[in-house]
Image 1: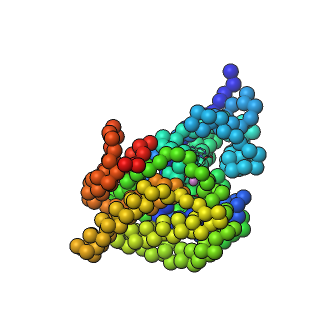
Image 2: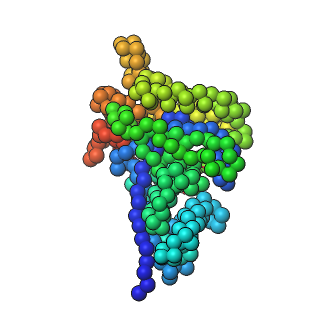
Image 3: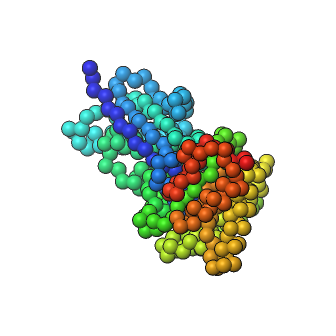
Length: 356
Ligand code: ADP
Ligand code: DP6
Ligand code: CO
C-alpha cells in the first residue's frame, strides 16, 4: 500500500470592528481599506478542516459540511490549494530528502460548527482552516504572515483569522499584494477583559454574498468613497484605544463603523439590507444601555457590530456581560436554553432565532 498524508487544523472566526468592504483587485483580493478585528478564542464558532494527499486521487475535491463543493478552475479555492502546493514543491526542490507529493491531488473535508454564509464570518474561519490544514499536510515552515497572504486570496477576512487577539489587515500598496497581510496589534492577554456575545438572530444563508455585495457597492455607491476618507483615522484611533484598554473609545468607533458600513450597503444600487428588525432592536437596546451608562459614569459599557448579515456581536468588558445578557434575554425571550448565553469570550446562541 502506498503512503498517504493527512492533517487536520481548526480556525476561529474573527469579527471586524473596522469593516473590510470593497476590493481594488478582485482576483488577488486586495482591499480598498485597512480593517481591524477581534479573533474569537472560544470553540463556539470554528471551522475544522482535514486535508489528505493520496496518489490515487483523481482530482482535488472539497466537502463542506458534508456536501461536495465545486472547486472552479482559477477560483479562490483553486488558488489557495495551488499556492500551498507551490510552497510544498519549493520545499521538495530545496531538500532532496523530502518526500515528493506536491503533485498529488488532495481531498479536503471541512465542517463549520455554526451557520455558514449567514454573516458570522464562515468564509474567514473556513479559508483560514483550509490554508492552515494544507500547511500542516505539507509540513511547511510558513509564518502566520505568509499563510495570511494566501488565505487572503480565498476570502479577504480569512487573512485575519490566522492570528489571535486584535488583528489589523493592512490594505498595502503593492500591485502584487505582497504587503496586504494581517498582523496582531495586541494579544488576547493584553486585554483579557474584552468579551464578545454572539446573538444569532437568524441562521439563514444571506441573499447577497459578501463578495457580490461589496463589488456592487464599489460600482454604485457614492457614499462609499466618503467612507474611504474616514477609515485611516479610525484605524489609528481604535488601535490606540485597544493598546490603552480604553473601552469607551473602542465602543464608539466600533458602533460608528458598523453603522457606516450598513449605510454604504443601503446606498448600493440595488440596495442591500443585511440587518433586519431584530438587529435594529438590538441597536436600540444597546444604545439605551449606553445612554444610562454615559449619564451615570460618562462611559459606554457595550458595543454592537453587525457583519454582512442580521446577527449581532456585542463586545463588552466581561464585568458587564451578565447585565447585558439579562437585558437581551428580557427583550428577546428564548423558549429554552441548553447552552445559554455564556459569560465567555464568544458566547454563541447557536441556531437559536431571536425573533421574540
Ligand atoms: P460569511 O458571512 O459566512 O463569511 P460569505 O458570503 O462571506 O459569508 O462566505 C460564505 C462562503 O464561504 C460559503 O458559501 C463558502 O463558499 C465559503 N466557506 C464557508 N465555510 C467554509 C469552509 N469551512 N471551508 C471552505 N469554504 C468555506
Ligand atoms: C462585512 O471576507 O467575506 O464581514 O473577500 O469577498 O470573501 P470576500 O469577503 P469577506 O467580507 C467580509 C465583510 C465583513 C467585514 C469584515 O469582516 O471585515
Ligand atoms: Co465572509
